[in-house]
Length: 268
Image 1: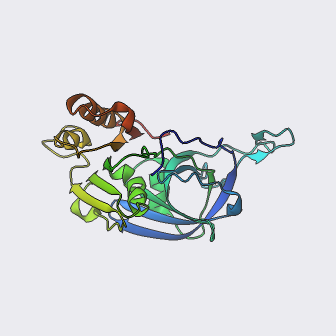
Image 2 (image 1 turned 90 degrees about the vertical axis):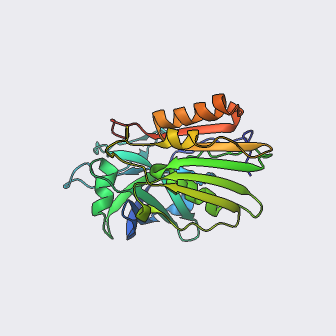
């Protein structure tokens, strides 16, 4: 496992055009897009299983995707005056460096730049990406990890589980819209997944996510040093962190809570 004390290499700015080679509806709420990355031999992966890139989309139906270029002064810019493209961060579900092929899983929902594009994506579409960033880093002495996420964090959690080694233990709680959104995830590690079909608005429930209630249902933690990773709506993730820190007395330095989205606000 990676260490919280890991020395990171400095981020290297770079941009890549990508062509869509496949679009797959994994579940009713999740779309997988396969990208062929032009110049992907330059792409610098982070080694973190939650690494993400920013997908850049066409500004409008009549304007192609453009990307910054490295200018003579060593800065990245748009000397041709090309239009800035809207972009959103998404997890790299899988990266095949030999084939320069990247998988991105996107939640399908109405509204939003990326979700709208994903629902209409087709082979041959062109998007842009940047070099990835990542942060998932369990302490080296962690004997177990607890992963609590809604569907937006499922691509990252899925990759974490697939990359577990033998003997690594993960207890996973995932909130999804419906039972048909469960995914089959293979792992060499010792993992258990509990699914909750509570994501989305429903009469009799407050808010769009029940992640804090899911966290509060966890009343005990395994023995020994561990690590807790939380991903979902920003305020919900913070409430989950508070439960494990204050109610269960877990070391706050061994908790990462990531806000993937904010209820009522567009993702930027």
